[in-house]
Image (cartoon, rainbow, N blue to C red; front, side, top):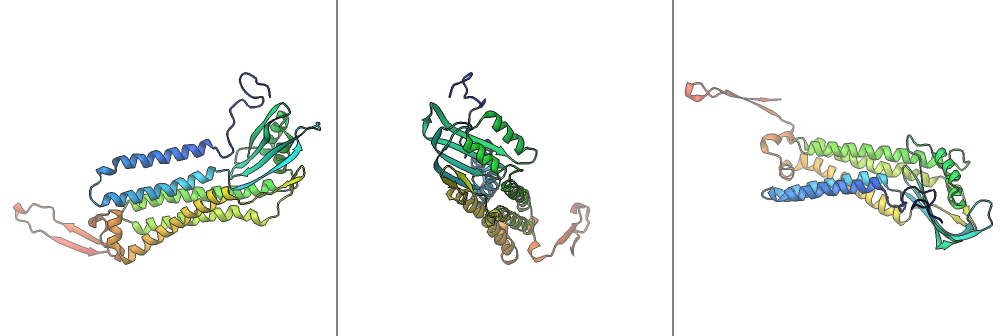
Length: 325
C-alpha cells in the first residue's frame, strides 16, 4: 500500500492490536497507581494491623480493577480461521489470510492478516472496530467502511452484525452487551459502597454490599452467556466457516477473572456477615475498628452514655446514665 503524508491510506491514526484498549490500559494504570501509593504508606502503619490493612486494600483493589477492566475487554466471544478468500470487490484476486472476530460488550473487532502479510503488492493487515454502545450508530460506521473500500472479508463480517441483517446478530449481541455492561457498573457502585461501609463501624452492611457486588458481577456473566443458546447465522468465508466460541481468551478474561472476582466477593461478604454474629471481636480486629466505635453492635444493643460535664472541683456529682436503645 502507498503512503500518504506518512500514513497508510484510510488510516489517519495508528492501528492497534484487537486486544489493545486505551480505556483498559488507563484502568490498569489507575489501580496500579493506587496500589503503589498504598504500599508507600504501608510502613507508617504500626503493629499487626499493617498486614490486615495490606490484605484488605489489595483484595479490594483487585476486585474493583477486575470489575472495571473486563468491561472494556473485547474477548467475551472470539472466533478465527485461516482461509483463501476474495480480497476486493469486483476483483478475481484471492488472498490467503487469517480472519479473526472479537466480540465485546460495546462492539466488535474484525482482523484480517495475510499469510504472508505481503501479498498482491500490498500489506494485508487490517483491524477494524465497530461500536454499538449508546450514542453510536453501527449502520453509519458500516457505511463509512464501504466508502473506505475495505477488503471483502471485513465488510462481510461487519454486514452480518448490521441492524438490517436477517441474521439478527446485532440485536442479539447488543442486548447481551448492554445488560452485561449495566450489571458490571452496578457491581462497581456496590463495590465502592462496601469499601465505605467497611471503613465505618457497620461491617454487617459492608458485608451485605460485598455480597451484592458479587451477585451482580456473576449476573453479568449470565446476561452475556445467554447468547450461547441462540443459533448463530453461518459465517462462510471462502471454503471455510467461521464460528464464534468461548475460547481460551474468553475463559481467561471472563470466566476465570470475572468468576474469581464474583466468587471472591461472595466469600468475603459471607465471611464478614458470619463473623459479625459469631466472632465480632475477631472481625473488629481485622477491620481495625475501635471498641468504642464498634461497641456491642453485633448483639444488637446500643448504649447511650450521658455524662455530667461539670468539673469535679465544683463539688458536683459525676452522674452517668446508661440507656438501652
